[in-house]
Image (tube, rainbow, N blue to C red; front, top):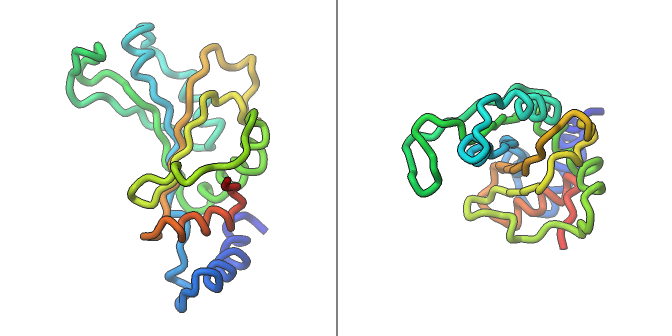
Length: 179
């Protein structure tokens, strides 16, 4: 049974009872997972023009090709010019999102040093959950020999709920640990 099927059969019904929701379709679920690497500092400070290494990293981590986002306007304080690459991002939906979150909680987070759980501060004002990893080498798909430079990784989990407590209950049902 894959992760999405397990969510639909087990977790969703338990959430319906826990949150006292009458309609099963009103139970919160994961809308999408966004994985991003900020590359703006590399383009400005280190003059790196080729981001193939980072594209390969995101492809290995997510199983999906990333998109390069470029700056819309120049900001002189950051030495940022217009149309300079600033971010690599990929969006995971449906089955891939649930599989990624399953791997993230079962394989990646136990490898993180001094991890004792997430806090409520990880929620933004729109009931999304944000996690920043200082180093993407903790993913088991990557080996230390493949990557010359290491960067941080931003993971945003977008939920369909309109309440932080419902979003927290959803993530706890998926195996996330909170302090």
